[in-house]
Amino acid sequence: MRIILGVGGGIAAYKSASLLRLFKEAGHDVTVMPTDAAEKFVGRATWEALSGNPVSNSVFDDVESVNHVRLGQEADLVVVCPATADLLARAAAGLAGDLLTNTLLVATAPVVFVPAMHTEMWQHPATVANVATLRSRGSTVMDPAVGRLTGKDTGPGRLPEPAEIYAFITSGLADGTLKQRPTAASGSAASLATQQGTSAVSAPDAAASGFAPDAAEVVSNVPAAEPGPLAGKRVLITAGGTREPLDPVRFLGNRSSGKQGVALARAAAAAGAEVELIAAHLEVAIPDGIKSSTVETALDLREATLEAAARADVVIMAAAVADFRPSEVTDSKIKKRDDDEDPVITLVRNPDILVEIVQQRGAAGTPLIIGFAAETGDDRGDVLDYARSKLERKGCDLLVLNRVGRDLVFGQDDTEITVLARSGAEPQTHRGSKDSAAAAVIKRIVAELSG
Image (cartoon, rainbow, N blue to C red; front, side, top):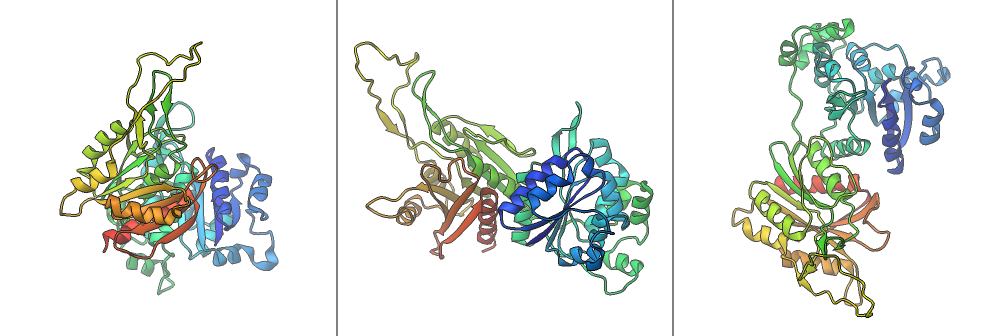
């Protein structure tokens, strides 16, 4: 895929380098177009080194190939990250003062703006009008995160983490919510505005001037953005590895980082779901805007999950739950004594939370339940044999198989999954980043819900 990555002049520009890396690792050809202001935050050499392509924002470079038109025409996707208030205003007004804004006018591929600015700027009526205008023309404007901004202030306007942006985009491409820009049947701006059900002058004029009429008045004239495929659905996700205490110091654990479960939470939220995340031990941050709670042991996870599953439409059991726990937990640290006697630790089985959720849901078949299987093969069978057996025993609707081992899956950024279905459908295998795997799982869930 040929991607244009436009970079606006905000301090969050440095995060776009990580987004660029994610695109490149997925095998895409990326051309970076920083604004002049963006180059004051991140230099051109950085973009060229990471992208492997020359970088320019001038319409006078490579004139013989008509660069200011060609790049937009050839693009399969245009992403503007960060999209500053100034850049949103120029895009909404249709200005074409540099290579990036020229490209935005030419491109008919999906266009995604990822805003980043201070809360007051994001909530200003002019910005509200500009965002509404861009959305009405078929562009996608991702809502900013809520969190710490430059300085001491906090609020909406923070650039989402690159992995969240990547998941939002890959999920939107997979489920079709990121669409090509519609083209007008007529060449007149007035007829295009009429076809889209908006005023031909109010929003563009407001954007061009930096002022806008009352925000509610502008937004009321703009068609609402299409809801995601999981809009109105409540999705419960468990993530991370449980820890079973031996004494006040030690515990039995596993190698899970929680990356896959967190990626699923991002992808489900990007698809419009109301997400609740129950997190055991994680090595990654929980995304802003995701409702979450934390647990430690398998018994803690069981109690929280059974309660939350009763109100969910979809349950994704991505946590790495300990199969066993010590039968006794000592109140003091287990000492290494001089008598050379080795301590004996007796283990007992933990309850099977996935089976209990399946039994709890009853005849209605709600919620849709997705299990995870971290498996290794042995002389009795390969991982797919064990996964099929587990799917039959557990009774869940889908089972996501991970082939695990040292330096495989746990803690890694890339993964290989195979999705098996209780219906007997052909298993589907996906290889790539954990965010792209999450998008593939969410796409499959959407298909299951739609029958």
